Length: 314
Image (tube, rainbow, N blue to C red):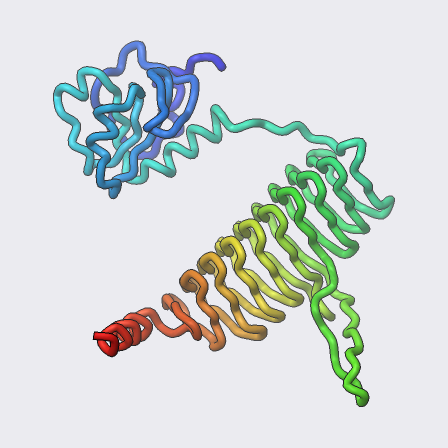
């Protein structure tokens, strides 16, 4: 890795940034946690971190991205370069992505199995032992190894699907007959994944029963998530590890579903909603609210209930 000078990153920095401290002969060639950094590392420090002053004073890193809450003494500024911005983590990730992220080459691994009916952009990557059925995959999309993409799946541009994920399998749909024996509901829909979506490892996205399961633009799906048939996930939502979305759940834009949360089938979640960790959602949630608990309820009501239970034990 060639040395990256301070001047090389200026066009990535946001408006209103300030450089405090040394500026001459400042360079970086790696990114590391602040505790593990060497004198050629770029690091960042969280504004709310309790021991940030101690970490900054002890780190060997000479280039530190921070916010205005950090106290930059004359002694520190004589030895280090501080890039002062409103959101240090965001600026750090942009620099790291631009200069240090591992770049994958396009292509289809020799062990991948591609159906002749698949439509795959030439500018994408299909990893080892991955299967792609009669589906469409867009430009600059990366599908890691050991994935299974069924027929009737449409994946947009700039999508990342990590190893072991299954997209387009049948949902869990059955009906008992007159003899109380299950008969399988045919799943004839597909899956639509729009642009700029990330899907983690070992996640399952079921096809729609009659319509489609849809993951809209910019949504981020973590590892080990279950997305049932006919679910619609809105733009720029985050669905975190071990979450379970039942059939026909609809989640509006910019919402957050925390780890291990479960959402009952046919429930609707509004815009900019936060569903708390391990919550069990059985009712529709209006826009902008935060719900927690089992069963989930508005956060204020949940906190009041917890306090009441605690008082009973006194």
